[in-house]
Length: 262
Image (cartoon, rainbow, N blue to C red):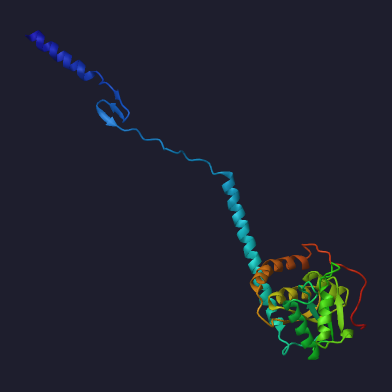
């Protein structure tokens, strides 16, 4: 009996010292009877940033900066040269009116936009505010001649042919202003065009050394005026690049043809 008690006591002591079995399962692990869950691994491990996303971000930033510069240049031009725009009744006198070309119809007649420019220039002439009209436009094709159409229309409005000067190489605003200054010797002028175009024309002419003011020729409503305003948003920064020599342009040159001898 005593031996049996001692044997049971020894058996229980051995069981207490022996480690308990470890059971593994899919849900977790059992260590010595205590359930402990594993920390789950993330389903989608973090990936490095894709290069194309970084490039797209930079392109977006550059586009926003460029857009901001375009708007700033347009605002500055309008703010700076707006006060130099007058009406026929309030314009100060100048010796020459520079009339910018525009589209003509297939039969050679001026479009409404161009007709209004010539009409305004004729009004300035008859009011005694200018002595000469410089008609500057595109004539790069044989069957397309803006200056001739402008001159003919001005004569029909009572302007003498002797007081009309035709510039056949005024293809762009910069070309017209450059040639007015360096081919025709114009030093002061009234620029005649629609309001949407005037501030850029004034900026260009004055940057090239012409003491210019402007008179708007908005004599009616124009169906495409919205498109023209949007075009000016881009054309104005281009003019800024041109007058500062960053964008090289090459107006048609030639011998000097001063309007006045003095």
